[in-house]
Image (cartoon, rainbow, N blue to C red; front, top):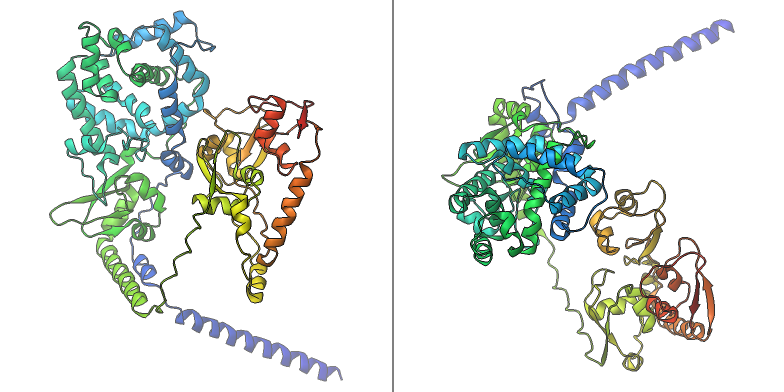
Length: 602
């Protein structure tokens, strides 16, 4: 019996070992059958440079972020040099520091109350921004200084790029000025900067800085004063010459400043304030963030055939965003090839080494990938199923419309409730794609009499079932958020899937500072569940009845709770708008406090 059991165990172990051996051989066969892609086979032959340095992703985000540009631009346009700012900086100490700066600069830097106010304003509101800007300056300032030294332009002009673009080569103003030095299209062409469908050299740090240097030299030959050169850069030489005439022939910036355009009056002081903060940042506790990669750690290589940033990123194992960052003048994420012209790509030095060592394989892959994509697209067009052109949407009935002018505090939901219509109808009548609606805009609203004349559409049973399945509606409505301890605009925007700019625009904020307990309107909320089409007609009449019933509750009081806003209160009472509450309670703005008694339908 024991012998029989032992033999069974031995047989089982032998079978298991044989099975394991067969499975190992089978898996080896499978691995041998897996074919490498063409890209992987090309990359497997690459010689690798082990001295690779990577660009930090956070630093790359700083380089492409437009937040600082938007804030600084608004500051310079709206800053009031005559308003005294409460900030720790003794006037006598500031005078001594400005005098020291003046001794080693060709600019006439002299103390005045307006300059002190702007310096203190930057110190109070923009410390963090300048910390980030100093990290960017480690990359860009060596480029500027090299170009200015060749033309004998003061190196301090480098600070002008901070004022102009917040050191962002992708910055574009409302007027269309582009790049680090904010050249308009005509000025860029005047200084031989290439601007076409693929390339905009106004965003090229090297070429745009060379053009800026040439402009500064020409303007100095005309005015002979560097402050006037800066003023002409901002408002044009014509405005400067007019200011000289109006001042009675005076030729110093501080003597003609009041005759210049308003923005230019704050432009040169903003430049000097920027210079001061960069020179004395340690004394004010501004700790510069460090740039991981400097400009001298990159290099360029001429491109022999057109290639996309994606192809380069795939081949060199680097983020496409890094290539965009180092090559901002290429608009389409493509390095083009024009006959008789050379185009260059800037890369970290270790990637340049990989490119040069494997150039033939790289161009072979680019050719293969480009041909494959063009063949695929031709086949897709050739064999795509023929479809009938989509029927044009039925024209909107040109019935009688009422017009409503949007007021501050209004939103589509409130307006729709007021006129007993749906939000989707409002958007359809006015060709509105989002839930945002500008203050002062006139909205078309079909009158109730005309709406009731419409015949109810016949709904097919199958269509009703299908519409009931498709319940989720993409439209969203605003909601409120009360600022808690530790919050900032960035964290709140991230929480609701918005940008800081959208959040500021929605709440009419002029700065990034927000107070604890402040109620913010958030446009991106959770989706509304749309009712099935088969019940839409009945629900409209029910909603209409409810709104009329609520309006009869005259004289109801509501006591404001912590976190309330006029918008959230209006939502508690269907048919009541923010404008109604303000009118009934004599409220001019939206400032309400906990415990305050409000009349509803009074």
